[in-house]
Length: 153
Image 1 (cartoon, rainbow, N blue to C red):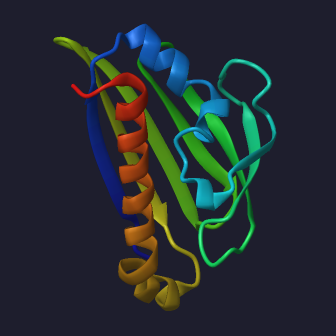
Image 2 (cartoon, rainbow, N blue to C red; image 1 turned 90 degrees about the horizontal axis):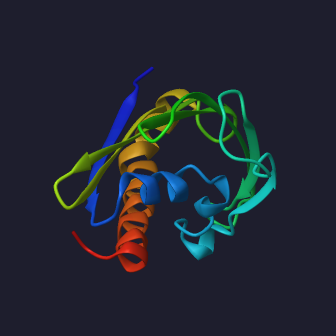
């Protein structure tokens, strides 16, 4: 099975504290997710992020099909990085690393997502047509939304 990687970086003109406060609050996922995905947190976002935190939500990524997604925050270093891993959901594997580092005049945010699509060869065939473009679209939306909220670097 092939493991794919999506790697994104974005600079914002904000402090590490501001970036961390926003990104480490699971409730802000809804803010940076396209509205058509109807993102809704079911549980797990009622306290600040911590290792072992389980977050359950519903998302509608493709064709109006509701999908339950459960992730666990597996690693966290305050104001530096956190990792979320899918425990149940649409991917055969989902491992998402979020890094924040101070740069001159702001912060650099980096996302590294390693993922595997389900359904064997059918999933691999669908990846370049459906999955990869959808992920690119979602992360471009996030980039634009964060610039709308915090300004361009």
